[in-house]
Length: 487
Image 1 (cartoon, helix red, strand yellow):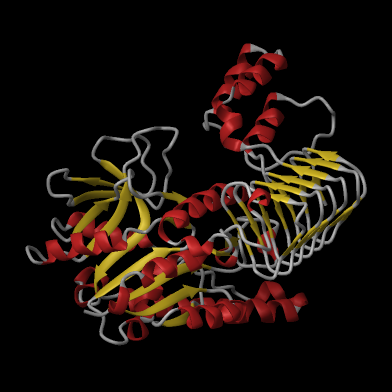
Image 2 (image 1 turned 120 degrees about the vertical axis):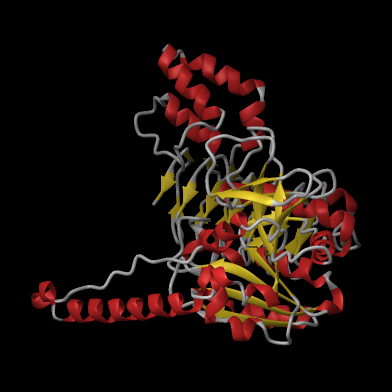
């Protein structure tokens, strides 16, 4: 029984996701728990043993950006790993049919399709068993991994929601964004399992390959005409630009199945044993890292850094992952929830808590890094303190209420602040504190986005204090900053 898998990694140009790090690195390759994000997907797929034959990374990024990772992954796993480069963005579902000959190599019986921007324990074995058990009784084409989220605080839009029959787990209806949450509604985890023989013969899907080719043709004509219009600028108005607005989304695959009873089912993960959440913003990277480190402590401890003669036990607090080539002084103290990348150097007296230190960073003597992500080749000066604010604790701790009392805001402002703190607001990002008198909205931004991010190649001079800041790459910071974007 052969199995193939497709991991949808997205497209260029990158969105604001994981900024400022995504400026130089595709988000799927950002290291979480010491390994690139999509490594955790591939490692979970490897647990399917000899049945797994091929894994395809599918996206519109230049393959050169993924070549080092592909070379590394191919040495780690026994199955084949390929890259399928999409020509047009926002059409990954159509690419499943455009590349159907490549995807069907080795004649797989089942096909896993996974989004890359998720953190999960990936109970793929259980999902496969549930799918196979239904195959014996009815012609099930699709099983979707889902999670029940009855709590409003824990709820995520995920990758759409399904109304299902609680007795049979059959999908009754699919929606991208449901305004309300009903008891028989589950959130898609972005992991799908198809029966290959039915996927590429399903009548509802027969025209997807031709439609994708048509979109591709129009998009290429559009690109050529735009290039000509740019070259002959004075005659630009004479060129008719073919802007293709057609897309083939996952909704186009899921919606028809919700109308065909018995063709699609859901598999709801046991949240007592497994975990899942989306990774959409930079601030979620640290919580994802903490989740993965705790998970690997149970299933694969060799990934974690264990006390040894080189790194004594009293130097490590909690779970950490330190690259073998990193240099950590015996007088430094690391953890909990810390990863340190290759060739990084941590000097005497340094303290690192709940942070990600990327490759070639230097943390000088007695520097403190808390709740932060430090970009490649950055330098944290001696006696400098770099810290962020913890999102989870800030949103639930008594200090949150104290902050609201200190504002002395009007009733309207208090209501706004309360809604924002509960996740009702739509404001995102760090703020520029110009006036020195933060409003309710500005206080919210501090509490809601509490991870300090330092871009690559940044030099922070000694004896400074950076709190809740974003520093863009290749900057020299020579003064303390609070709640600022340093550009």
